[in-house]
Image (cartoon, rainbow, N blue to C red):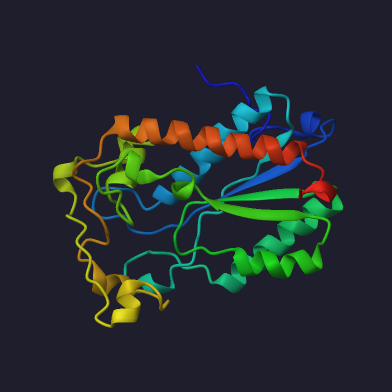
Length: 257
């Protein structure tokens, strides 16, 4: 039996319903299409962003706050993975152009709050948001990285940076049918920068992924479990839902205290 239409998911709902609604917050999941070690699918980031946005929006909708989840953007900044087959790169300038078009629509239709649910470490929307705030001063735009919503160290022994224990646990809960057995995963060993400032993180530079990891993973996934993933996701989605509800209720002219 097919599931019912979820009215807070734009891709599922329809004009008959939408034309009578007054949405307060738009939620935009944003991921990437890239290799995730040997055992996770290329769309891992997209599945995660979509899941968290939709589950959080469900909670908010049931509390009678009008949020709408937009279709997930499936490509992210992967300039450091150009040598890895079918890692699809979207340049930051392209992200800006896409966001500008989306915000223009929201601005024209008086949906003045946009939340980007980001699932890819290579995406950084801070400077784009700054520029868009000058072009569309009525629209409040913000972004969150879902894996930073809650302290992952409380739930995982070694969360990992990419396709490690955290992401693998989450995918075992979200998409177990697309996750290969852990014995097929690589160990996620990472080579570090030789230069001290880069290695310690107070100098920022792009990593060349093909040179730092043999299996494209960064972080060992072997201790991942679906139970850990479910527990972490429950906390994260609730906190994101709380934020969306609070944002929906807040007057943009009264954001500070």
